[in-house]
Length: 180
Image (spheres, rainbow, N blue to C red):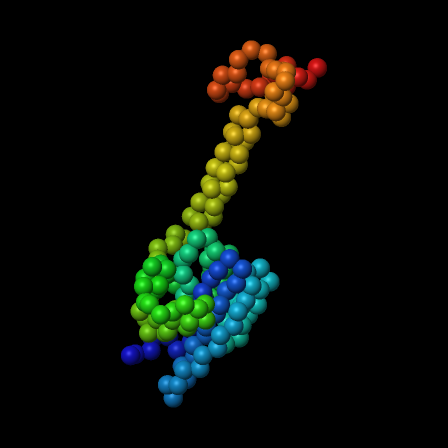
C-alpha cells in the first residue's frame, strides 16, 4: 500500500495517559516504530509535543472519545496537522486489545491515508462554545443553589422554622431561614 505520510504519529488518548506511536518511513521503506507513553498533564503533553517536533512529524491522528482529546488537541494544533477521528471507524477492527496496539493501528491507518477527519469548528468558534458551556454550567448551579432550602429548614423534623407554605419558584427570605 502507498505511504502518504512518511512521518506520522498515532495517539491513543485516555483519562490519565496518552500512548503515542510514531512511524517514520525512510527512503528504503523499512518503517521505524517508536512507542512512548505520556501523562495528560500540561507538562507531559508539552513533552509529547517536543518529542514530535524533534522527530519532525508532520501529521498526527487521535480518537475523538469523550473530552479527553481536547487539551491534547489544543496544545498540539499549532504547527501540526492533526486528524481528529471518530473512534467507531477505528475500533471496528477485532483483535486489538492494548493501548500500544491501538496507537500503532491509528498510526498505520494515518500513514496510508485511510483516516477521515471529523468536523471540528475553527478555534474562535470552539472558544465561544467553551465559554457558553461554562456560562450554562454556572447559571444552572446558581439556579439550583437558589432553589434549595437552607440547611436549617431541610433537616429540622422536630420544629418547623418556615413560616407559611413554600411554593416552587419562590425565594427563601431571611425570616424563612430563622435569621433574626
